[in-house]
Amino acid sequence: MLSKKEKKLIKEIWERLTPVAEEIGSDALLRMFTSYPGTKTYFSHLDISPGSTHLNSHGKKIVLAIAEGAKDISQLTVTLAPLQTLHAYQLRIDPTNFKLLSHCMLVTLACYLGEEFTPVAHAAMDKYLSAFAAVLSEKYR
Ligand code: ZNH
Image 1 (cartoon, rainbow, N blue to C red):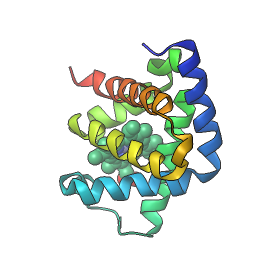
Image 2: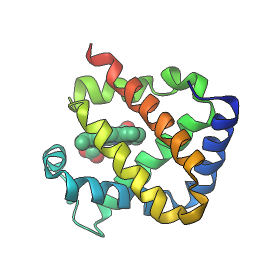
Image 3: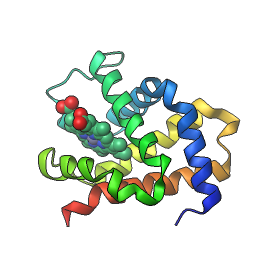
């Protein structure tokens, strides 16, 4: 689905963003919680207010998982197997929520990367995040 060129681009972007994983992840989560308040219900056991430790640490975890997957996109199903199980069987996250977070992540990247987030990068990132969400949703079937 993603071309070789696109895979390389995605890998490079996430490599570049790994040092600011916390900043990117917490911004994307905050956007998701604000725009789609229903998503907050899964985090009722945590303090996810802006600037909170949990928001930052969870944001960092999410970005590191996305960056890890980007290292070898052809192996996504293998890399994400533990996260698949966690989200489907333990956390029981409704798969529609993955699309909401993906959307918020695109907005965060657009804000953070500015002009560097070209239409080509945007399109490739959209494909990658969709593939990621599809893998996370697989176990529900
Ligand atoms: Zn999730 C968790 C990733 C989406 C909800 N996550 C988690 C983790 C990770 C992740 C890495 C950690 C694990 C451990 O610790 O081991 N996610 C992720 C990603 C994505 C996601 C990458 C996409 C892309 N999630 C999601 C969504 C939701 C969620 C959409 C809802 C809305 N998660 C979650 C929860 C948890 C998690 C709830 C748990 C938290 C705590 O801490 O408790």
